[in-house]
Structures are given as structure tokens and as C-alpha cells.
Length: 401
Image 1 (cartoon, rainbow, N blue to C red):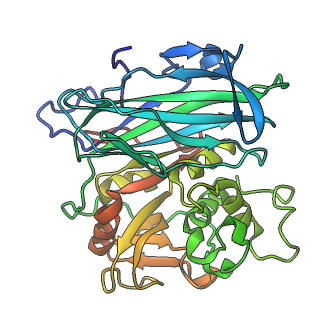
Image 2: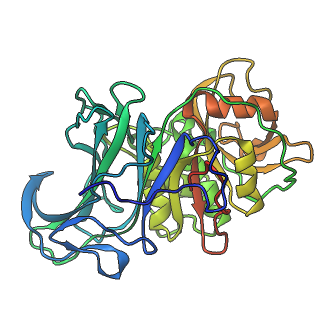
């Protein structure tokens, strides 16, 4: 198929002379449907469902039957090149079922990469959730949760495919109700943004990742390794979707904040040996009845719009000594914190899970310092997680949600 998927783009009232955005989001869900190529699956009811498997394979010492849905080529914007694509999905996987996400890319000169496995994922423990970074060719490679251009930025379009698996003797089917793909032309800096006037702090629970240091090493061992599931757990708690006692019944009795340990278990990526896979964290949030996806924002003015809508954001930051005053750690090559508000002067209020205790998680960071730390390496990457009571802000020129 030719590229025909609609991507998140400026509104109809946007000025046509606006500069091309550096981030664009393609989304398939109940509103858009799932136009594309199907083999052994149906897309009725606006979900992708395994109907009559067309193929079988051996994986993890078992035989599986599967079918697939493929998007066809997605071209975010004519004449616009990009260097990264990050998928997010919402899937239901009954016992002995799983989904596999694959992507490939095409360059501006027409060269096409091979299909890359981005994830093999299930909500339960009957398979080991995993990415695979050992995939590269002259066009693209996989970096855990991201398809990255071999030469930057020279990608023109991409395809995404979902393979739905069930055990050879099973009649159950996995379903996919939402899929997104964030294409970006990454950047390492941006112009400091002025305060838009939002003076609100959302009431999120406060959890420290550091109180888990050395615990449950099979899921990364807590401490510095658990910033992502700890940040996500604070957001889940805000929406009343934190793990239940039944879900974390495997955790040792008397363990502090067992819901954080459960989130680490549910997001652990065996292939990467960590809990920071962005896509896996969003898949876990989606499995809890929320709408969650990875995107990149252009600046803190965009983040303020989410806070005004009652939507906290987990933001990926990076800084060296002296670059983020008041931080509980001196430096980091990559760390997740939750933006929960802004002060009357525009400073950023965050829940920083790197704090040594739950009581010290709430921090207020200098706006310019935080914005630089956020744009420096992740180019404004965030987890967007919301429910029906908190709809997304209206799109504006250059927005990607």
C-alpha cells in the first residue's frame, strides 16, 4: 500500500506559513480504524483480532499460530525527513497469547530496511517480554524501543506491523485496540520558553525509587534502575489505577510500596535487562484501562497545557553536575521524572523518584535548567497517560498528540 495514514498535524485553522514540526504522531484506534493489510485477522469493532491464523512458528519452545496487520507505508509529511520512530500500543493478551510489533523504514532515496522486531509483549508471564537491539542494516537499527536511522536524519516513511499469536491448541485471541508511532527529527536543544501562566500543581502520590535499591534483582534491582516504573506508578495512582493487592501478592509481606515492585515486574524488558523501555511502560498503562503513548513535546509551554488539562507527564531528562539545581542526584545520562505542575513564576514542579525518601520526592526546578535537561538528549520525550475524564488538550501548530 502507499502511505495513506493520517498523522497528528496542525489544526485546520493553523497558519500555513508555520514551520514544519520536528515530531509527528500516527495513530490507529476506534476513531481512525485500522486501514491496512490483514492476514488471518479482522479489524471489525475497530480492534485488530485474530480470526483464522494463517501461519505457525516455534518460539520459546512452543508452537504458536498467528495472523498479522500491516499499516502500509506511512509518510508523515511530504518533504520532511526524520531519524527515529517509537511505537506505543494497547493490547489485550489472554493467557497463552502475545503480540509482536515489527517496523521497517524507507530513506529519502528509496532504500528500504529489513523488518525489525521492536517487541514481543504480553501482559502476563507466559512469555518473557523482550525487545531486541541486535538488529541493524544500512538503513535502520533498533535501539531497545526505538527504530533509528543509520544516517541521520534521512528517513522518509515507515511501516508498522502487528503479529497476533496464540498457543497452537488455544482458541483465545489477543486484540489490539490502539497503536501509535512517533516519528521525530531529534534535536539537542531548543529556545527557552516563556511561562504561559499556568499556576497549578496536581495531587499525585509520591514514591521514591531509591528505597527499593538492591531489591528484586530479577527485575533490575530497584534504585537507579526503577525511575520509569516508579514515575509511572505515581501517574497510575493519580488516576486510581495502581496495582492491586492481588496483583502484588507475590511481593514479600511488609515490603514498602509493593505497587512499585509490581510495575517494575510488568515493564521489565528481558532483552534490554531493564524497566525503562518506553513502549513497555505505555503498554502496561494501557492494559490498566488508560490511554497511554510516547510522544515528544516542543517546549514547556506545551507541557503547561497538559497540566492545565489535569494530565501529568513523565519526562525524560539528562544533565551533568551543576546543570539542575536541587536535584537529588548530581548527574544522569537519562532519568524519568513526573511533571506535576508549575509555580506562579513558571518554575517546574516535579515528582522526582530519585529522591532518597517518599517525603522528599516533590521538587521545584528552575524552568530554564529543567527545559534544557529535558530537550538535551530525549528531545522533549514524555509519557502521556490520561483517562476519559481528562481529555487531551486541543492540538496546535507543530503538536504531536
